[in-house]
Image 1 (cartoon, rainbow, N blue to C red):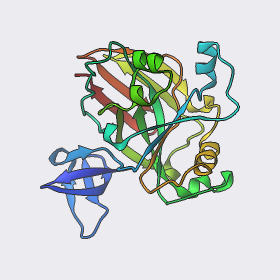
Image 2 (image 1 turned 60 degrees about the horizontal axis):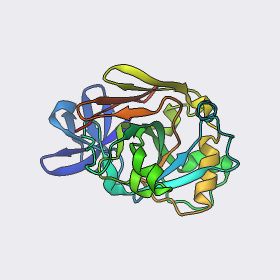
Image 3 (image 1 turned 90 degrees about the vertical axis):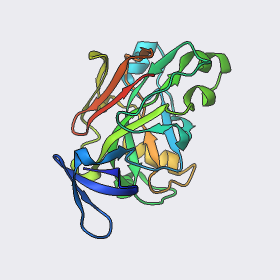
Image 4 (image 1 turned 120 degrees about the horizontal axis):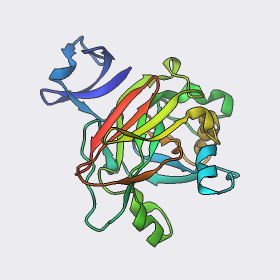
Length: 243
């Protein structure tokens, strides 16, 4: 797996092997993970998110399965990394967590076909689609409620496409250690290749762009002081405190 790091003011991508990080750029450098600042593992031009994309979540809500993916976008300014703090907005009274599998784009692409989807993916990571639910209901659309600074925790690292099965892995969220969501990526309504084909038919995807693939059932509220974890089998655990 790999991530983005800062060391002595320099930002670089590095391969993670246990407690060691080896630079993937330029001259050889190896550091202890504890010596580095862990940054969000991608620096996207945009974050494309998918709503209502788990069969068991649709069942939970009593909603019919959508005919096409429901898309919305979060700005890059919303991103924080592992152990970054989710800042509770002063204008909201109800903020929710949403555990998701994220796809990181590895090649600039447009109009990618289903069978070529994995050719343009760099890897997969954990994502939390933090949402001001009260504002989402008030506005009737999703931009404001999804776009606050710190509302896109992602990480901790990216697992390369060849080292992860995006069709069968458990996805779990915990708040203060209590399991809130527990599902499997096999429950996706629209799988990863379908999403790549659909989204790239709408917009050009740039290197580093993130696609958040939707959340399973069990979404719920968080409050200042809570610690939220998103864990995906084969990837790791994304941990963020609410402030």
